[in-house]
Length: 329
Ligand code: NAD
Ligand code: UDP
Image 1 (cartoon, rainbow, N blue to C red):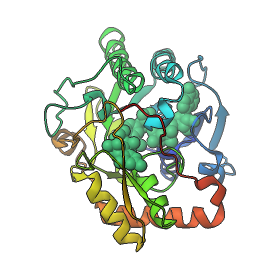
Image 2 (cartoon, helix red, strand yellow):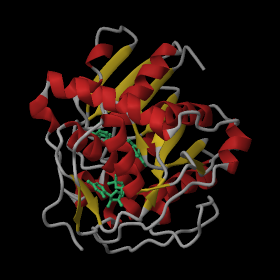
Image 3 (cartoon, rainbow, N blue to C red):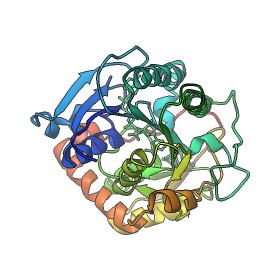
Image 4 (spheres, rainbow, N blue to C red):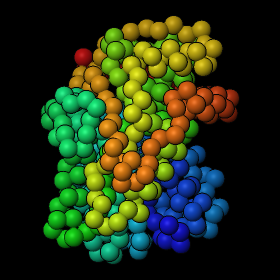
């Protein structure tokens, strides 16, 4: 895919900024829309001089009128600390944002992809998670603004497909990490790396036996772009993630090992509704997209550690780790 005009909502964020970069590298024009709720201009400043790149500061809960061929809808706070800060705004971004972007896609005849999430499976009772599993989500818990918001967005995408024949695509992203993660968003990979690099205590919530499957950013974006270019009848949802499954304790030990840190592991209360296990079944992604991750956790962590080392040197004030003090237990 090249020579297209592509809208990326949330293009100032961790994943969105790398997607913008890859779309430009492939020869497209990119319109990046972001309200910088959790994104950062640092992520895209190297793109601002490119005459195929345009930045619009805009909140997608309000309508947007532009002409594009493709819409990647990534705008939404993604880490628990960020999406729980203003739960109402999170729901609005998921739901009103989806309605606005779907309305735009319908009006201009654009293809549209939704960045959904493994959180739609909640605390899953089926392991690994297959797309046909409907999930186990608490609709009134502290994570529900995000989980249910994203589920409703999936519903809206499906309705527009069924009712308006819109070429929609849904991907369910599992925990993704890499350079440009926000240092203060409280996610486990950025927290552990920054804590280890500063020889601070590594904060494990609960007993550390909960599992996650960590996908490196570049692999994820490759899968996302492949999904967008599948035939029109390939709508998903399709899981995108790395099936390698690790306990949070194993992750902490690996980060300590790779950084040579003298950090000690400390325990903190487990936040409410924290999923106990998570691992994608990626058979569909393999079959439909010919995609699977190629970066193992040690390799991806090594690159991410190098990124945060440099960030700590350049901008230490930006790198304070966020851990909850009053998160629900
Ligand atoms: P991020 O917080 O770095 O990026 C989200 C971007 O959306 C930010 O730049 C933010 O400012 C912007 N944004 C938020 N609300 C907005 C609004 N109302 N209008 C316009 N812009 C808005 O997070 P990320 O990790 O890059 O996640 C990107 C997308 O991928 C999100 O939709 C997220 O739900 C999804 N996702 C990410 C992961 C992951 O592990 N990174 C996992 C599952 C799903
Ligand atoms: N976690 C942790 N210490 C931290 C941050 C997170 O033990 O400093 C745990 C968290 O409770 C969860 C896992 O790591 O079990 C992944 O958390 P993250 O916020 O990265 O993503 P999510 O819970 O949305 O998968």
